[in-house]
Length: 396
Image (cartoon, helix red, strand yellow):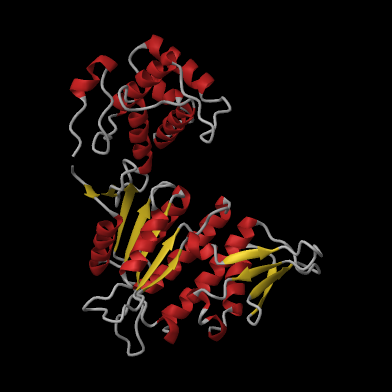
């Protein structure tokens, strides 16, 4: 399969990513939720702690941000007095070991002021953070604001690592997984631009003697806007700065059996739309798939994005490309009606047989007319159910 490589476990995938970082500064990964991004980040971190000939003491070589990092901050809501609320830091975590030595408050505040308008106070004795806004003290901030604060603290720590602080001199890698949960698009763009600037600094870092001493980076996200901004910011040339050597991949888990695939997306960071079609083909397979009502929503969304790519306002552009006028009218009615119901992925309803066959026809015509190259990820949908056993190509 051209451009796609398969890995049988997270450990072998981590080996590949670490090898990539021998010849590049940065790896950008796009992956859906539930692919295993958090587990991958932990496997990468654990690989750096294993005792080897190159690392006989098992010293950690990775500073990381992921869901575990966010879990180190827990709200104390003062249920008795309902007034003295604060965010409690888990003092047992090694993540906070050097916090009192780093003098982070000013750097955190500098980042935080770009995204929001509340202020904070860190009590390093009680390991807690309180928040204030205007004249109001000990306020409860939203989950999105909480994530922004945690992210700003992490960015401040990264700056100290790049400065060569003694607490981080063993760190050779930085792994950042999905830093923008609960953020709106405006903040997502701002955070991505600031992060890209920091990662450029990591790629061009020099030690105290002026020798090249980069911190190598893995970045992963399920958020397509954030991912695309990162691709654009990392990929562009900046005056008086060397080019950031980086790789971009779509990370996919075709099944639930632990097998992973990587597809290079240097020229097509929006490849995940094609992967969505692959998932729809899987669901539409008459023998092994299962179609739910919400799949019409997903198909309509892809058709609208395809029309937008070609400069058109809606999915009517995609339907006009079909040869049969009767089919165009039928497909339009189906997509208009069946993609607007209150269909939830959390309470899925399986399609009736008539709608399943209609869905397969629309999907088959759409993929065929626009010649999407999806069979590499998943067996192609057979022309009709009767031919499914014979005509599904082998999957490597």
